[in-house]
Figure (tube, rainbow, N blue to C red):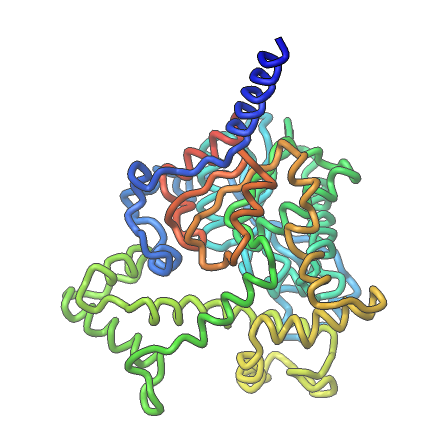
Length: 432
């Protein structure tokens, strides 16, 4: 009898363990065509493998604005006129329906291509959709960020939550049956912190939250992105810049093709041609894109807070002012530079000190481990080859989310979000 009880307990433990294991998608059956993470990150999904979605003219949508920080309108330079109010996009259903908030990734506005894709996906499935900019985008920093120094995840979540509440208040006529939340890349990390905040504020009581390719350790992720710019690229020397090399390759590619066609499939087609980019060149291209995002963040935060690191505080900036000198200076500051020069000093001033490692834990998913482990409404979809992940990150996701983690073998950083298989899984999660 005792042996039977022990066997039953062991069997029950094995069943429980199996039921909480992550969903690892088999590479042999997955079907996503890009197994190179750099190619996937840049080229995304070939058009023929994406879901059929409605056109813009078939969506009842409009852009709106919020005046959240009226006092800042008088301190921002005149050339910031377009972002003195925060803009967002709402797509509405004709009948009562759920509403899903979308949070964009690093430096991205509410109109980013991935936000637009997700809007169409969920709108077709019957959701009202609100598209929000990342707290690291210059429009959000200018018009909605209280400290205009994004990087402290809990503070960014507070700002986002205020925006979400303002959006809801601006549309009392919208009949919402329940609320959902999702974000991609840094927006996914933001979504996790917003969800935790909502547990106490209860303004939305999100029914389900989906994190798409979030950084696990924020400092690790920004370190990975910073390193991509430092990649040694063959063919680049003192007389040939990376951009000249890229231009030469594209020129030869279009000459061989016979016409110029700039669209979503450009990189995918280019990679199938003789002018394909090497891994080092692809890494440099990804790193350069994120370096521009870091420069935007550093410049905007410095300007609004008048820190004098990039823009001299007493130098007047008007509509006619050239920003080129400041852009050049900002481009010398990567994510680590921005964190070191602007985020960490502000954080230490407000918290009476603390190490960089402590900050790293506070702004990463580590800070929410118990909540994420216990909250069954939150799930993660990630890629095993994502360039923002570091050692131990996938292990953390496995132990924290269990069977609420779906791990795809390929896709790089967010490259497979618009793949039909992934899109179907996202819809199934919210429906289920």
